[in-house]
Length: 101
Image 1 (cartoon, rainbow, N blue to C red):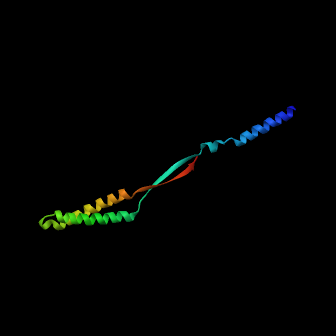
Image 2: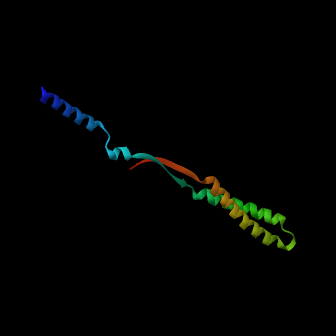
Image 3: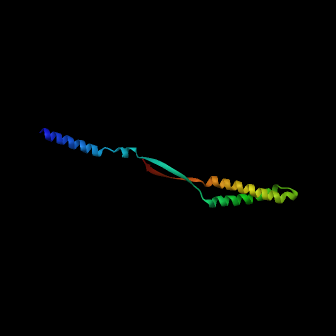
């Protein structure tokens, strides 16, 4: 009788141990990983539109013989501004979950 009781206790202890999570399983957790994604096409279009708009504004605001310089300066400034605006509006995050230990 005593041996049967001992055998039952040992088997029960082994069964409980098999069901308990191991230390490696307990340390795993999910982490959200994100990266910024953008397209060059939107930035190039923003630069072109900004340059054309800047050139028109520079030409309209310049006086007398400085119209060429105003057009060039407006095109450069408009291109830079257009590029920055397009870059800001186009960037978005792509995220997924990963298991890490």
